[in-house]
Length: 151
Image (cartoon, rainbow, N blue to C red; front, side, top):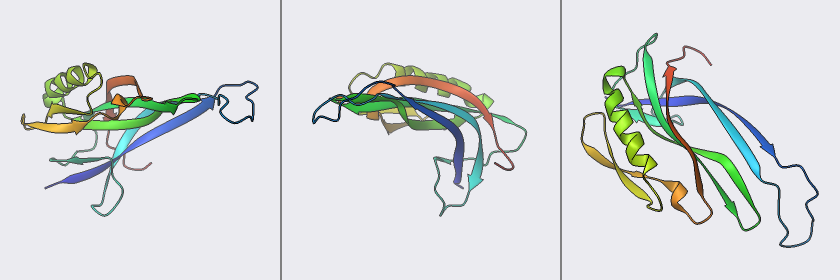
């Protein structure tokens, strides 16, 4: 059985202050986005979802979210932290798999695909979008979160 979940991510975005010219090809303000993952909820299979799980999470239990925050930009400015990739939700018993995957992700330089371990221990291919020319990796981490009854 597959369970779909939606991650609750409170975001906050700021940008550089300054006098940016309206002239063509002039710099634009850089933006900075921060993320706070506060929990997750189970959603139906026809709803928007962030991750598909091979187990059904239980309330009042800790889970561990492996994620990467990355940004993009262009010749005129950067957008730090503008995007998030979710790579897995793990139980306490699967935490070693999450840590192995985090180490693999931290080694990515300019490859768009990487092999990670599934919760069953089998490898699968994952996408690393921060490998692009104007893209950057801001953070890879594991965050403890819980199933939320209501958002």
